[in-house]
Image (cartoon, rainbow, N blue to C red; front, side, top):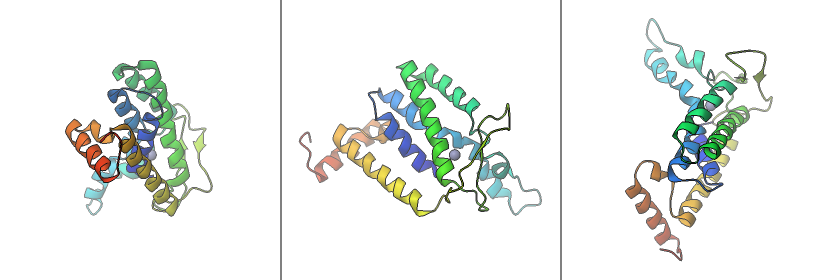
Length: 188
Ligand SMILES: [Zn+2]
């Protein structure tokens, strides 16, 4: 699934309990971070017509989609969070939600299912796949993404903050007050 869908999922998870602003950001990021192994797509696209194309995306995407990296992320969250144990545990969960979403709807570009080597680099015994896996641009992904967007807007309207708080407090306030003006809210 797309990084946007993963991010919105992480944001929902972050708002399913009481967390500080910093800890919410960590949880939201935990659901996106497995895809940093896909950044090789930039090199691959730039070099695809060259004499020596770099196949970093084809080769390395999904190489951080494993349990070992989930622990790395949980430890980083523990070190960076305010509410350490809780945030770290939720980040571990957020990471796995990402894997689940990929299993559901990230069929590979060539139409093959895209297995998740869950125990790598220690073992290649367990490759997670789901036979019903759909393409990243199939309709269920759009439905899920729109539903998550709707919930994101509702939460911003209801709680008075949105994921924009991760970038700018001012932009976040402006967004929430615009939302609350547009859709009458008791606490405008
Ligand atoms: Zn992924």
